[in-house]
Length: 147
Image (spheres, rainbow, N blue to C red):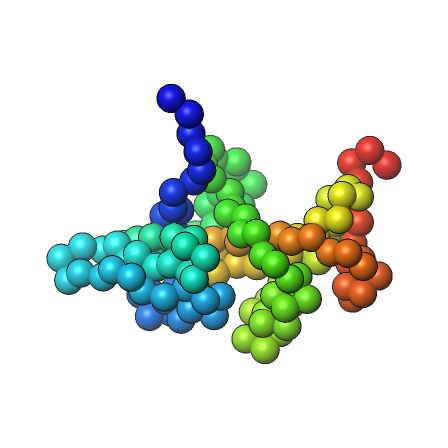
C-alpha cells in the first residue's frame, strides 16, 4: 500500500453562507450539497477538494482552539494550498479585504513564499508558491532557522 496524495480536507465552519463566500474567493465552487447532511463539497478547477462541515460552534470568544490559546491541543493547525502566483494571491487578498495574519514570508532560501490568512471561522490557510524575484514581493520577511 502507498498513500498517493491527500484526497480532500474537511473544514468545520459555523456559518454556511459566510464560509462558501470566503472559499469562492479562491476559485472553489460547490460540487455537492444535500439538505440532509452538514457537508458541502467544493472543488476548484485544478481538482482540489475541500469539504465544509457546517456544524461548528463558537468557542472561546471566536478563537481557534488549536492556534489562538496557550494550551496546545493536538490536531491539524493549518492547510497549505500550493498556488501558481503569490503576487496574484496578495492582490486577491487585498481586493477582498482578507487580513494576512503572517507573511509574506520565505522559510529558508528555496524560492518558496508563504502567506497565511484565517477563514471566517479562524481556520488557518497557508498559500504557498515559488517566487523567482523575491525583491518584487513587498514586505517579504525571511525566516531562516539556521541563521
